[in-house]
Image (cartoon, rainbow, N blue to C red):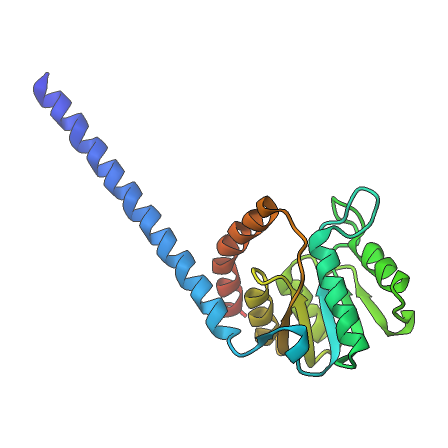
Length: 207
């Protein structure tokens, strides 16, 4: 009986050790991927006041409210895009998101917001198939012919957005978007971005 119990304890210890090794490996991979995103975008992240000029500013989509208006994350991105255009730092705006998303039509919401804030419809282009950051960047390059751009997003997402756009062949700089967000929203998006980095690295390596 004692020998059997000792055997069970040894097996349990082996399982625990293997689990700890696996978790440790995943943490190291995730940390390394996040470090890579920050390194690859280093020198290409800035604020509105110091942003360089570019032909187009890319605005990635995000959730919209039940009434079809942009929620805080998306509104912050759009407000910065408006500032960049008004400051003469961009001539066009490319909206990229999910036109048929679960929260609503991101493109219609973004376009309506821009027009309501005085942006000329003639300078707004739309991509309703930018279903991920990678697709937003790749489609901006291959479908819309964008070679130089500013991409706008919150600080958590910006390193990944800049890195993926530059990997797609766009000379991209990122501008930090505003976020009048709840702490829980910021925490959730921090976790989401932390976990998304390994996939982004894999996508860049497999291009």
